Image 1 (tube, rainbow, N blue to C red):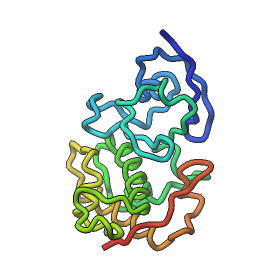
Image 2: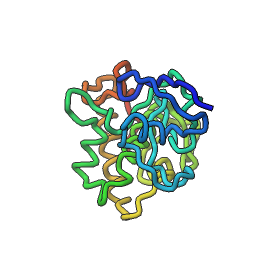
Image 3: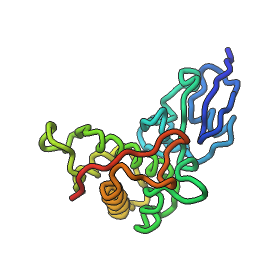
Image 4: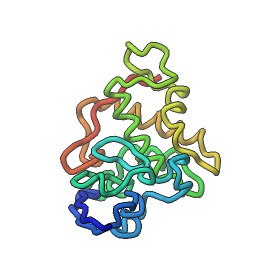
Length: 195
């Protein structure tokens, strides 16, 4: 059985006909030519396919495309604005937060989503006091990014990149520039405390 699905991908509304068993990842890559999210494990274990779905990070390989009709999808290619990279992308470049680069689009989308979650006050398993504002120290960043694997082992630089992006976010609370936009309608909120 097939169905038409309308998705807003990286700021552009697209209609695609898919088999109802098609994952969002396969619809993006095979039908819409959005190749930033990568197919790694195809089981939701590596995070290479992470995208922002209606502002929240998800593994696109575990999500059926037909269940997302009308949704906003942002891939790593859709971050930033006017040709300028998003602050997380800048931080990954500045801190060499990648080696082969295969996991990087998923890492970047996960970091953007994670910073939003921390800014909203969401605790993680590493949060000492769940009633307090999250403090994005290295342990907290590692826990929050633990769903994204890097076979090259660039974790030290990935943590440094996320720490830098968090500090930049905290320094610009409420004043994100256009290069930090996540979608055409919304930009990341201010940041959590960084240590």
